[in-house]
Image 1 (cartoon, rainbow, N blue to C red):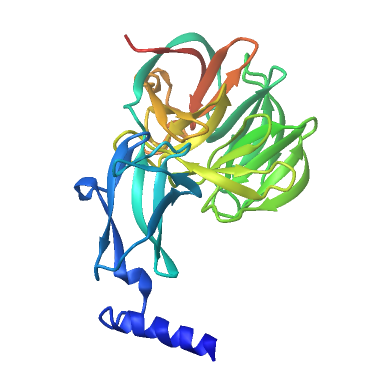
Image 2 (cartoon, rainbow, N blue to C red):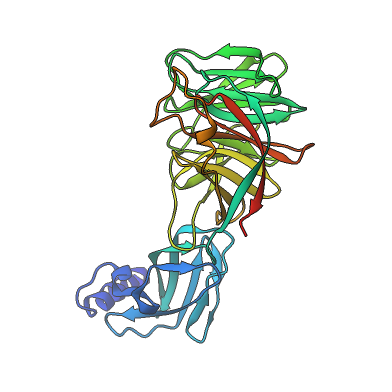
Length: 349
C-alpha cells in the first residue's frame, strides 16, 4: 500500500508540472554564449534551464565519466581526450534525480604549428607499387600495396629498391596499412572488414582478424603496447594486439574543427604522424588527446617523381611514412612513385 501511494504521489508531482511524463524534459543544459565548440582547458559558464521552476537540491556535471566541479558557475574542460563529447548533468530534486545531456565539441587548445622537410637521401622505389603502408624493422623496410588484383605485402631493400620477398593478396581485397609488433606483422584491407597477421620472417600468414565498430581499414601503427588504426573518419582506434579487439579511440581535431583525413600512420615518441588523404601534407597528432599539433608541408616532393605507366594524376599521391630509429629520419613516398625519400622534419621558421 505504501509503495502504491509513493507511485501515486510521483505521478501527481509530474501532472502538477504541466502533465510532463518524462522528467528529463523538465530541464535543459545551457552553455555560455549558446556555443557548442570549446577548447581543451577552457572555462565555460553553465546553467540549468528549469522549465517548471522545480526546486533543485543538487546538480553534478561530468564528461566521459569524469566529474567536473562547478566553480563560480563555470566548468573547466580539462579532459584528456578531444572531439565529440556529451556533457552530462545529474539533477536532484525532492526524492528524485534525473540525468540529462548536451552535445559539444572539444577542440585543441592551440593552432597546429607548421613544419617543412629537407631531403637527406633519395632511393629508387617500385613505380608499380600503390603504396599503402611502410614500416622499418631491424633495417628492413616492409611495404603494403593496394588496388584489387595488385595488393601485396613485401620486404624491400630500401637502398636499392629490390623486392626481397613479396606475397600477393587475394584479388578480391584492397591492401592497406601495416605495422609490426611482438614479432608479428599486421596488415589491414580497405573495405573487406578484416585484416591479416603474418610471420614477418617469411611473410607466412598466421590468421585473419575482423574489425569491430571501425568503418574501414586505412592506416596502422603501434606504440609498443597497442595498435592504432585509422578508418577514414575522425577516429583513430586502439586495438589489442593479442585479441585484435577495438578498445576505444581518439578523435583528431584542430583548434577550429574535427578533422577526418588521417590515412597512413607512424608512431614516434608519443605522436602519430599521419598522411592527410590525397594531400601533400602530414599531420602530427598527440596520441593521447587527438590534438593535431603540427602540419608538415611536403609541397614540391611530388614534382621530383618521374611519371610512369601506372601514374594517375588523381590518385598517385603522397602516401607512406616510416621512421628509421637508428638513423633518426623519416622515409616517405607515394602511390606509384619511383622514388623513396629520406627526410628530416623541422619546424618552419
